[in-house]
Length: 472
Image (cartoon, rainbow, N blue to C red; front, side):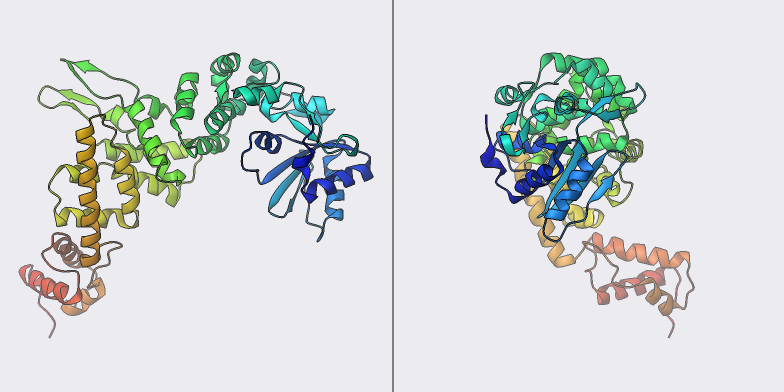
């Protein structure tokens, strides 16, 4: 089969010309080919394999391009990369690989195109288009990858046990592609993943998280997380999540399965946000429930303090997986910590003071928090579902009203500590903290409005009560 029509981009003509000048065979391979055949949006990166030196080919291509773009050379890997018109093009020499048990980094020697296709992770990623002048656009498909694309199957070119044991990251990639493309993992391949799950221990946290992000970014992340669970990988990567897949019954009382509830919440939130960190918050919002679960005759099943404990667990997960411990982690912690607040508000009469406190504590993240809490409603009772969402609408309107009137978001006290010190001729002391906290509480409770005059009058009255006198 010939696909020359897909190679009309001028970059392919230049690569063909450069390969001819060097007397090399070369091919475009992998995701670019797969996505063309699936009629998906074309990738912004292209993989070129040369039977010979990929680095030499990259340097020659650069010489033929306008402005001669810089070539990044990675000699240790035998690869080179250049950027042309917002496309990253990676060049590699065809190679054979062999692995040791302790590492996913292979021992590499030069090889043929067939050798290079043998080392690919899946049949759908081993497909190649020829860039050679004599057979430009011909599809090279030694493993029936085109058939697997049509059947929507993820399958390894060679023995899956060896493929996954050699490079255990491929297990996560198989699941990620299944989630992204809505494909099935071939039965033998999935069994090999379960057999080799423990091998994930040799993969760095950063690489694991890269694949988890891609699963979370799919339209329905539960597909990927269920496959991770069924394969045994999730227990090894996020045991805090699999601990939620447990339902106990005491005296006829059960609690809901918080694992499957969590996957519903992640799917729900994915309909309303592309923010991967908010999706992480949805994934981890209930992790504190397993260790805080208790049963009492009076209250039945309770999970007191699960939000607080869950937010502490977030940090341990981020540390373990080498995730960023910056504002991104703090955002996820904050969302987990506050995840029940709007739900509680929606169950009660919504008071202005409660809404003020919600906005004060959430700050700029109040919209994200509301999105998370709406996603958290997974009841199958239509009346309850409608009631919660109507109440959330009330909460949202109250937030707007309170914010317009009281300016609580990113709250700054209308009277500063320095002004209080000057009023009463004080040095830094406990009394200043008491007065500032009292002003804040009075504003949040609606006792005074959020302006300087009201705050000054309040401070003078409060100071008199604790024995402070204004300097004349």
